[in-house]
Image (cartoon, rainbow, N blue to C red; front, side, top):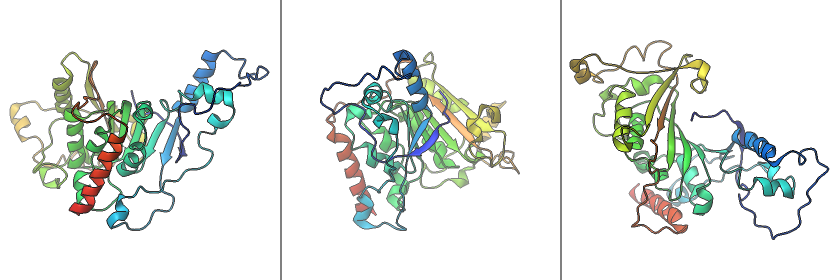
Length: 338
């Protein structure tokens, strides 16, 4: 499943996806042309609306700097009053959509910390209804601890997360390739994982480009074949698991790699063992050439049939306080180690 085009909205406190009202008589509104439609058709209309909606959580007036204990506090996210107004339009629509909207919209965050601050407060019964998440790759807070540790692994640790697609607005170099490796071998909580990079450098760096976010001298390998084969080792040769890379045909055009008309599949190949031994030792000059480096890249990782996307650790408690407690502990370590 590919990343879908969505209407951008912003939202802070969203309505609960299950009713909290006492049982009461709901006006059937039998005179309404909309409610005279069959329920199956109304559900299709709701699904079209929700599946084209992205709710973007962002900070309205972020402070220039944060230090000390202030870094542990959740950022104040902008929340326009009329987000998902259809849920409040009338009691009948609320009842018909209360179990539909959360599993069809996409929740989007600028930073991983914002995502964690918001989702760790949700009960697992709500968290498990979310199907589409999108987040920026880099941390909001500037610190050595966050730069080293704020990675996808904190999202994987969310107990109860059962996504269809997790989309990461990724970086450009070795750290992003390292993140892809991490998801393929250890990623949890999502059937698909989409990396979007605004540069082809992710496929062209040399070991000298590496930094502290990956292992020493992290070296490129032919992709997507290497990632694809590793995923098959994890999920099974006949599982249908796959890794596909798309590259934009338009240099410097934001979002072009998400359009099937302006992208093409990308593969790196080697013709001999000698070429394989020498692969990745130097930069790929062709991909870094004029009008080539600025072409976006989309990496789609799809788990195999029957894959256990949660891989629960039964040694840990399963109550709703687990996610928030683990996240608060992580942030406290960040403050202490910095």
